[in-house]
Length: 255
Length: 235
Image (cartoon, rainbow over all chains, first blue to last red; front, side, top):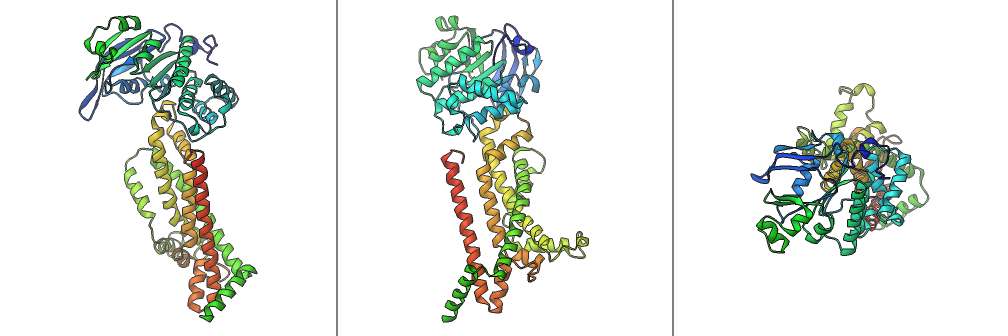
């Protein structure tokens, strides 16, 4: 599975500038209860690899991810994937992992089986993909364990495995390791690095600076619903341009 | 006092010897209520699941009515079905009044709101947790309903048991549309009402004991299901 050389046309196109990239935001805005949570973002993401979205609490990071994924509709502006508005077809080429693992009240294997079923994958292929995904996440012995009795780290690994089993072109993650121990965090990060090598575009929200340093190819720094910085990771960490980013990286409290 | 002891003694003998009259009444009661609950479950699951997931005008009103009907007095359900099935009613041509079928229909009317409302609540609670994840996975509304019903299976089982408890114990609806006809529509509850007023305390007591045991069994099952679900973290 997840072989970038697979004959699947959409898959092969991910390497480099596939039809889903660039991701373009035009005057993107989201307003809730009279408050502009996302305040007119203009942005183009065209680099493959891992884009890390950082920023203090309440900067609008999670909201931005949901807008990009199409889980909520913007109140202004638009999201364009490869120049096209998000359709059901395009949405199906994305997968998302949430901060708090959302797992069905079924076994670990059945959770992946269910997701593959929603995508209309044939039963014979499903069984193979479930096995592959569990193995990838190091959960091969846990296929029939009820998903919700797994440890927190195992649950998040299962969520990531489920997302990867869908063979997405774009993988979105909202603070995937926020409540995990270091070992589990490392396992998740390793899975992300491997996935990125296979040509999956990854956008991950985190407020863990260390994690951003380990993963990011480019960084998007958000504050009060606006993009404060967008540059290559190396540049961002060595010479942040804004005071807020400098304060954030220095571990100061950013209001 | 001696009379009551005597009656109690006779009642136990009726149960232990599986008195044919008693067995006939018990079996009819079980048949009517089990079938009614099976039908009400199918309708209630679909209704509750759809109400939790689909957005349509009047959805709130339907939910409120459904919840309110959980407390529908059995005699009112009986009266409603009576009007429906009586010769002058819209379904009068079917000649169903005073048959077990009429009693099943009345109990379906009685139990469907209970199972439907409990199903809706269970599905809504799950949806709150699952909504974003399922939409992210690309689930259609239909697929979401199916997912919620399966993941709420232990709560649905308890809803069904609650519905059965209500059906087997009610007397008003089956009395009105069944008529308590010997060998045809005499259930445990209507028989108890009749025999008590006739003074045949023994048979009434025997049926009462069976009814009580049924209630105990339903509650034990409820508790067992809940424990099992909690152990698997599926509750």
